[in-house]
Image (cartoon, rainbow, N blue to C red; front, side, top):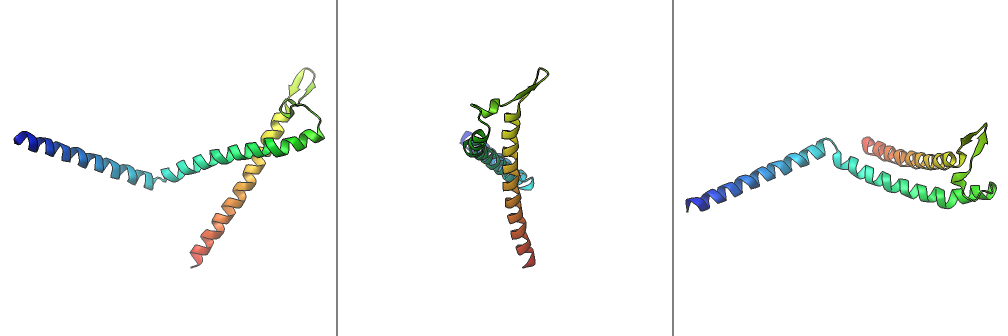
Length: 120
């Protein structure tokens, strides 16, 4: 009988310690906005993939029409035996500009909504 009480007591202690751990973990996550950061990181990676596909699927074919090159990423020029990879730079620049424009509009919308909440 005493052994059963000891088992129940140890089970209760382990449940309490796991509950305390979970409460502490949730408190930590809320306090330091770790969940928001993780969600932002996941959304950021997904949006980067989307922007990459837009650049490679829409913009790069338009540029390829202007600059008749088989593979635009390999577009380069050579000066005195030094190769400049212009295609990679333009592709990355387009991706960066699209991300910056999207972020500008998203942050502007968030700030606008935040100002509305503060006026009330």
